[in-house]
Image 1 (tube, rainbow, N blue to C red):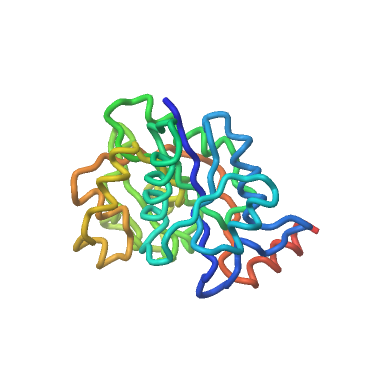
Image 2 (cartoon, rainbow, N blue to C red):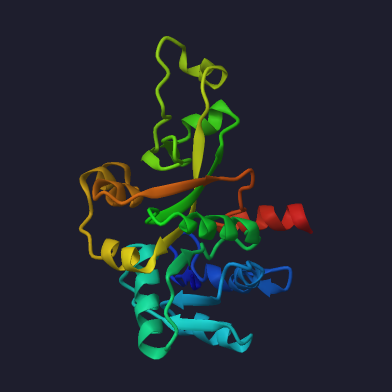
Length: 250
């Protein structure tokens, strides 16, 4: 299998404009993500997919692969799809799998990229992602921490902002003592033909209710494999997040 790692990178983030170009210890955020991806042995190519010429120029300055895409995409998944289509038009190489790597995790662990890529050794897997065990009731009840429940073959059954599964006959504050819960981590990989198909799907009913695009894929019958990890990357959503990170590291 040939695998492409694509890093969607928007400039006009509402909470942190210009975030991909923010400096962390003398190196831009997007370059840190890019260089972490280069350490993942599973990837045959790493590409930044952006909507802004400033990011194009910056990635080109360190000789990275970069593709200009539309500013109108509703998600990183759609941006990855356009980037893949552009790669197919300009490159004779064909990629079987696309890994969608978040551009705001400057210290992403390459082993996690390898883990989602390895899921496609199973020919029945359409999409792969990661989850880790939740270890506190505060995280379980946090609607910003997306939960996932899986079946016996590690396939996702449902994703929710609510704490799932519901534990009957026990008070909610005691649920951690009576069940196991998983937090979904936003690293995705798709078969190339599946990526093309899901990018054409209209928003689903469950997706609109929970504001989770992966529910659209489940609603349409795609199998999502969930690999477990004990690591979680540091995501930078706001300037305050960056300041906290800098205070911890330096």
